Image (spheres, rainbow, N blue to C red):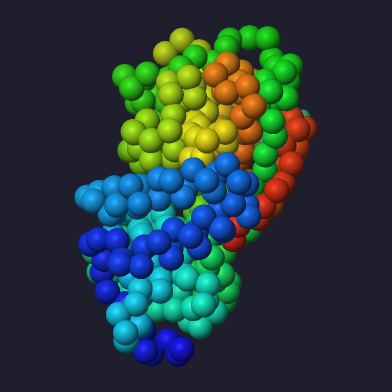
Length: 313
Ligand SMILES: CC(C)(COP(=O)(O)OP(=O)(O)OC[C@H]1O[C@@H](n2cnc3c(N)ncnc32)[C@H](O)[C@@H]1OP(=O)(O)O)[C@@H](O)C(=O)NCCC(=O)NCCS
């Protein structure tokens, strides 16, 4: 089927052939995250994908054949002037035919007209984008690493102040610490969600609301020196048994004294308290110096995702 027989339209409700998407995405998720994650996704896919569609800050598009069969879906979450792809899937029989680009072009055009300045895609099950296939795109491989939480929980850490659960009332100083940590980061454009204190604050609120998986106050932790926040770690459980560290950062003035390791170890301790068999996972760019730290703690690569960023459109 050639791309020009495909129609892209905005989507308000799940397609009639939703089970085909559920089955295909379940298979892709299982191949990366294992049978438990696949089983969980299969059970809650309809509820989760319907709830996402109903969110005010979510836009979605469908690719349909001339016979009105939906063959591709794209969900994009808006965050101020930025957008992030939160679901992107093409049914197996329709892959590698250019449909992914038709969906993206339509979405990016709408987002650009709506004033969105950059769009990030680092989650695309069953969609393979080519790095040079679209103009104005920055690409970057990101390694996904994992380790048993129990192993990380036993890592010895620095001896000074311990991290504590982060309370909503402390989001201001925590956001300021996050913005300081990313101010001169070599991968800053991939972290547009932390480009400023305001954006970091919004990220904290979204994390707390479960946008990156179920979380608890114990999994959103901070280090303090008096009223100054010196480090933050955020984690969520998108699949049962798999806790993703979505953010870890230390104020530049306090780095390389063991605080980052301590935040990760204390998060792991909080995780194993209720989930002794959980796996901890995180994503890191190949060039990031933080990779050495993760490897030293015991994290190992198990998957690589290509991150795409369309900027300043
Ligand atoms: C990654 C980060 C949280 C580590 O915090 P930290 O308190 O310095 O961590 P620790 O002191 O426990 O460990 C330091 C180790 O991290 C690695 N590391 C992290 N950032 C580094 C950098 N900018 N330069 C060199 N090494 C770095 C090194 O292996 C270092 O060990 P070493 O000092 O023995 O060489 C911190 O550097 C940071 O906030 N960076 C900016 C935000 C970021 O990149 N977050 C991770 C995204 S994947």
